[in-house]
Image (cartoon, rainbow, N blue to C red; front, side):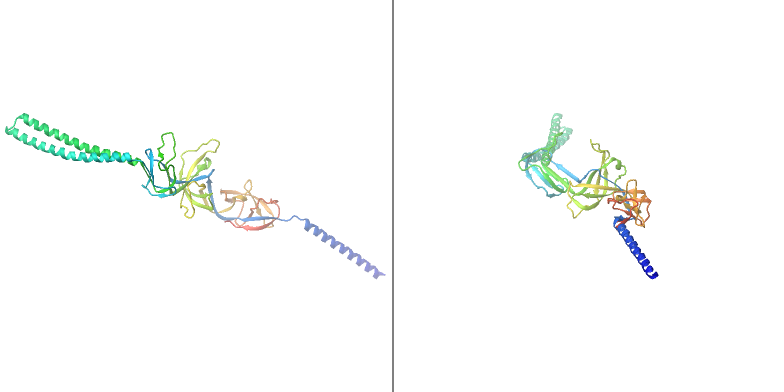
Length: 393
């Protein structure tokens, strides 16, 4: 009888043990399936690198040529010859356009004929003047010996002076003829348009037979030839007046072009406008010119491209830095702890730009911070699951 009671007692214990195990497993399963899952985040490892302080343009800049001339002939007239075409490369001094100038050529020829006539007349008149001067000297000698009268001597001297004056007048006629030739040639030069520098013809306004006129004061007209020297280019862009005080001539810069994606080109500040541009409904800006340190060779760089500039005015090397996008308001970051939870840190910062911010305090080299702040549930105190520890670039 006691044996049967022991068996029944053992069965009850076994039954309650099974029930307890099932309850524990149920509770464990409920906790497992209802627990809060760690948030997946991307981390950035705090390392040392270079941080630059820079300023950028407020509106799109423009690529310009160092030299560009929109030219018309100095005189008006009918276009008789077009020596170039659009897109053609020309050299300095090359003739681009000629106006009708036959009348000026005729005037030059007339002046040349007058010069020849004056030259011949000078030879004749001056020879007679020299003979008259010799006669006057002989007459002076004869008067001293008493062979001729004073009246005859006077006539001889007067004749010599008269012929000498005629000789001088003839020589003046030669100078006048040469001046007429110079005037005619100057007029011919005004009818010819030459390239003031080597470059490429951007545009031509006018065709053969059409009239070309210089632009009168106050009345702008289209230039006959638009010539661009594309061997030297720069970017002109507006900088906010607040940032302009940090810009100096000679500072290094980076140039990016909308037409050439994924690349930037080295530049240098070559000019800062001496005044602030005040346009209605726009922020006050200062125009800054940045020249290409080395002109792009493989890309088709064209005048008129839109461009942006980033002027570097201060550099700190081998300092702790983090991506600027990982900063929260108030210079805070979410640091990753060893237990897998996030911790909020307030930082002391130094130089900063759109890419990196210098860290003065609040983080140590090798610590990790959250870079994927836009994900739901990312906040201080939550447990997270790191995806990839991103090294500094």
